[in-house]
Amino acid sequence: MPRTRDILERPARRPDDFHGILTGAPCMHELFRLMERVARSNASVLIRGETGTGKELVARALHDLSNRASGPFRAINCATLTPELLASELFGHVRGAFTGAVRDRKGLFALADQGTIFLDEVAELPLDLQARLLRVLQEQTFVPVGGTDSVKVDVRLLSATHRSLRDEVERGRFREDLMYRIRVVPLYLPRLSERRDDVALLAWHFIEQLSRKGPRPIRGIERAAMDALLSYAWPGNIRELRNVIEYATVVGEGDILQLADLTPELRGEPPPGHHDDHRGDSERKRILQALLEAGGNRSEAAKLLGISRTTLWRRLNEQP
Ligand SMILES: Nc1ncnc2c1ncn2[C@@H]1O[C@H](COP(=O)(O)OP(=O)(O)OP(=O)(O)O)[C@@H](O)[C@H]1O
Ligand SMILES: [Mg+2]
Image (cartoon, rainbow, N blue to C red; front, side, top):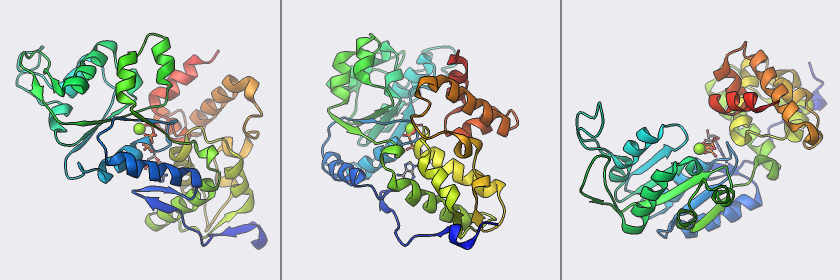
């Protein structure tokens, strides 16, 4: 048991809540002010930020703050579908457009009419769909897959990416004209490591949230555990922080969250930047360690790291 003086109690300060985006960081408040102004317009917004930084929360907040709030909000992840399915998801299809298309089906652009559509991982959009998206943005019309008549829509476009679109344009993977269309207003969402105060604030928030629902009410954090949280690099950002706290509340016992309850990478990894020359190595070690922790279960391991199952597999195979 840790000694009393090594235990931190919940601080009085609570994070501010802006449409579900919790924070105490001044840079985030600047972003909120900008969001309030941008939301009122119809401008296309590109949200840039690493995985788990809250891009989808920002997109939803922009919709809720806009005069389209009473209209639909539809989100789609461009990285998870085949090009054919994605085309049909976005633009719909007519009966007989392809095998299995037994009836007409509305796509997201039709369903989001008078509202907002959010294209997550927009950099992964295949080039032919980029051309079609450009047409929707220019003319506010689209043609369903296999159809001939164009359909008129009034949709506001928000998109997000963790990549630099400029780099994608240079590599010939993204249309330059589309890039300008979709990022009329670029918003940058800082990494968790760039808003250090938020680590403690959000850790306490998640502890409280999980304590309320879960079997283990926690009233304090061992100082060493808080130090580990504060010195960690958080590559999976807020999603990873939440997962780490959830893991700790599940594996540990008692009402004090201890260093021993944290995942191995939090307990053992050297401070951020220390391993820069061997980034690949330590990434691989992190993944292998997580797999070990999760008894070889990839979904569980990915959850521990705050990344998707496919990202986990890709990263593991990318390494030398
Ligand atoms: N500031 C925040 N306050 C509270 N919860 C947050 C915050 N930021 C992110 N989250 C939570 O973290 C998780 C990840 O957020 P979100 O899905 O918006 O991130 P993302 O940037 O879209 O990630 P990805 O690139 O992996 O799609 C969600 O469960 C979200 O509710
Ligand atoms: Mg997302």
